[in-house]
Length: 179
Ligand code: SF4
Ligand code: SF4
Image: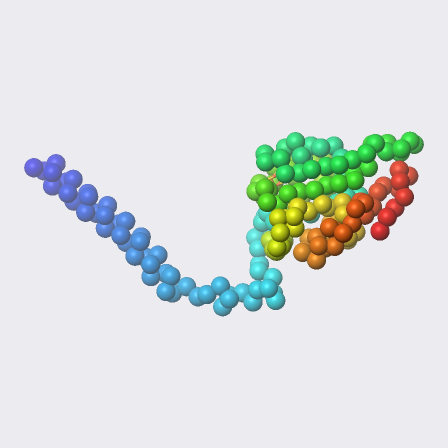
């Protein structure tokens, strides 16, 4: 009898605590203000946390084309194209460094193995595009300030990069600089 009563009380208290959580969130939806009452987006940027993982920043000048980032990527969405540098220069010329943002999950696993510290997660979270092709960003074809990691990635720069067939810059001594 006592065991039965204890089970009934426990069932009622469990149900009540579950319903309390549901009701609490139900009330919050009426107390919470709209998104636009907090932020004037897109006129003003939305504040982000210091360790936010947004679209990458990449420094084409420092990349040595070692492929470590591409090998570390769990979804294989980094595509590197490179050519052997002409002597006396050593190493590789990176002619393409594309990331497919339809596949990228912003895990940051590509950042840590980079020996040249030229790839890291940026703070930008908005790259709107109308086609899937717009989500494939070739950092070697971006305008110099973006390709060198000085400016953040933006839809205009990505759009312009689609018109470029050659890398925007190659290391001096191995080939002619292009702008
Ligand atoms: S953030 Fe993750 S998924 Fe995206 S490119 Fe880097 S390793 Fe790949
Ligand atoms: S790990 Fe770094 S240096 Fe190597 S290819 Fe990737 S971005 Fe370039």
